[in-house]
Image (cartoon, rainbow, N blue to C red):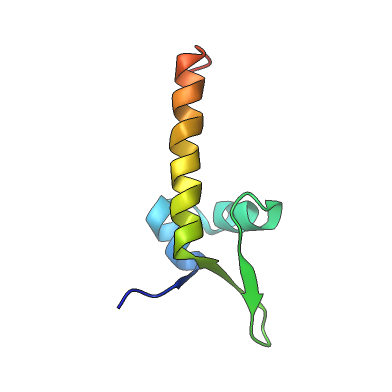
Length: 69
């Protein structure tokens, strides 16, 4: 069974980004996440990460089509 929630370390690994970049995505609200437990650790729902990735593909397609890239 696949876990519903991912840690920021999981997100970092899946997107091949730094921990600072993963934290920034969450803190800015660009990647929806929740804080859980007494230590308030961040968790990202796997489906939200997939939505974020799809949004980035669409954004990149739009930028290519507009000649921005």
